[in-house]
Each structure stands twice: as structure tokens, then as C-alpha cells.
Length: 421
Image (cartoon, rainbow, N blue to C red):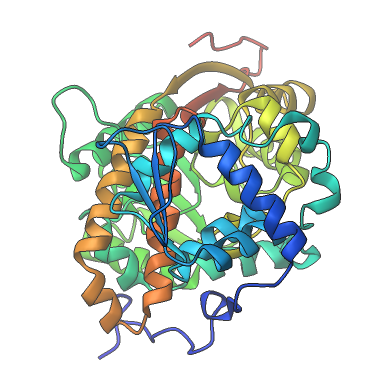
């Protein structure tokens, strides 16, 4: 019997299987090798090349990187470093006993790894983002399905019992992920003022954890997703919880939402909106909120200057994990809200180090269940791809290059009174 948790294995030819043999570009490979040697010479890491040559400034306990196939590794970096570095891990050109620890020093110096004079060449060597990955209504559906419709069982293999795929909030004394996720959900619901009778819209259903928790407070919930597999499992979980009369799970784009809501919550969905649509996203929140209502947007952010410098880049994350994605910055969000909406910020809370711990626990769970994931039909290259994604993300938060925020906005009442928080 097929359920929302037992779904077909992926097709035999997938994006991760399409990684070619290392491209050949001797000139660019030579330049990449020189830049790599320059970048690691002062980093607290140990790099060991095949043959025994050692690079890096790290001592015997520093994170270790083994470059198993140096020629292939440097050719991949030379053709496109932002994609080639991750592809080299996928194909086994390099390895590490703890990739997150290794990548953290790189993330701390991300803006200076390439000498500044060469950074001006980015626009000439960076791959451009595919037009097909723009987050039009049709494009957003394709982009979401490429990630979230892999298989519910893959996500269940490493997520906790709440099936929540966003940062947990590790309050003092909290160590287990399920408790941290409930802390995060409750904080968002409290910030949005969700109580019995609240009409709540959730943009980005996940697998239903927030909708279920809100419905248990007595809220009437409409939750939106573009993932058919997420919707199937969310509906199943809502029904098992006995809350089907309180929750509607709709396969719908946020741009197609209508109605009036006392609260709107969106947890880590804005990263999939695309920079060219951020104004539409926040304008839509404004239109959907009743006067006096509140919106909570949980957003992964990056430094503003780095967002501006890399906003047109096409990276390994875009190609393999989140097509069409773009992380915002706090100043970018504040400007858009100020210029395009009538809502205003009343509160914000950062908890990036909680995300680092969330990702550590996800990666540990993924690693423990590698054989189970293999049994679902996902091969070694897929598993290395996801291990790199989780480690790469964890490193970004550990280095404080990335952060995550719960941003709270309020809409003035009909008499123009503003909620001051």
C-alpha cells in the first residue's frame, strides 16, 4: 500500500548523476591551483595532496582536507570554483572526516579568499543563472518540486519527529532537536498572536508541523505549499491529529492566495522567492493581513554587501539544491517593506547558532541512515551531495556568515494606530 511516506524512488538519471568527468582547462586549472594555495596558506586547516604534500597553517588537530585527485580537483575549480568545489566533493576528488569543521574557516574568510583585484573579474567568469529557474509562478513550482519532491522518506530519515525543515531554537538547557523545533514554532505563533479563533495563513507548509501546532491552539489555518509530496504527508498528519476541520492544506502559490487573515507566518520560504519577487511577497502579506494583524517571516540572511556582490552568481547550491534561491539581507528586507507596504517591523530575533546545531544534528542523522537512504534508491553521489550541502550550510552559520531571524511585522489598525511591539 502506497502512503505519503512511501513514494517512488528517483529516476535513474538525475541532476547529481549528470556530473561529468572533470573538465579540461589547463590555464584556468593552473590559476585555480595558485589561488587555492594562496587561500589556504594562512587558514587554520590541514590540506594533504595525493603524494603527501601538505598545505595550510593548521596544526595536528586542525580540520583535515584530503585532495585525492588533485588534477581533477584543480580543473573543476578552474572552470567554475563556486560549482566545481562542491562537485569535486560529490565525485570524491576530495574528502574530509569532518567537512563542516573544514569549511568553517573558509566561510569566515569568504570575502577575501580571492584577492580583491581578481574579484572584479567575477562578472566575466561567473556562470549566469538559467532563465528557466526564475521564480515565475510556473518556475517556482518546478524549483520547489526539484528539492521537496525528492521523497518524503529521505527527509524523514534525518529530520526529527516533528518533520520540521527549518532552524530549531535551542533555548538554554535544550539539547534535543524535537524540543528545539517546538520552541521555534511556539515563538513564531506567540509573536504572531495566534490564539483560539485566529485566522492564520501559513506560506510554506513544510510537512504540517506549524499548522498542527496552531490548530491545537484553536486557530483556523490555511497553509500553502507547491510540493505535492509535502501536501500529501501534511494532509495525512493533520488527519491523524484529528484536526482536519481546523486546517486546509492547499497546493497554491503565495501569489494566488486570497482572503483576510489575522496572522501570516512564513518560515524560511522567502529564500525561495527570488530577489526580483521580494516586493511582491511582502506586498501580498500586507494585502492579506487584516488591520491590526501581524506577520512573522523567518528568514536566512547574509551580509548586505555580500548579497549585492553575489546576487547574480550561479552557485553549486543553485545547481544542485535550491534552484532559483536567493538569500536576502536585513537591509534589503527593511527597504522593501518600507517602500512597498503599509506594514512595519515591531520585533526581530536572531538565532544563527541554533541553526548551526540544527544542521549538525541533521547531518549526523543523515550519516547514520546512509544505508536506509541507499535502500530508497538514492546512490552514493546523491548522498555525498547532501552531506556537502548540510556541512556547507552548517559552516556558514558557525562562521556567522549566515544568520537566521524571526522578523515580526504589524499592520496598522483602521484608525491608523501602530503596534509598537
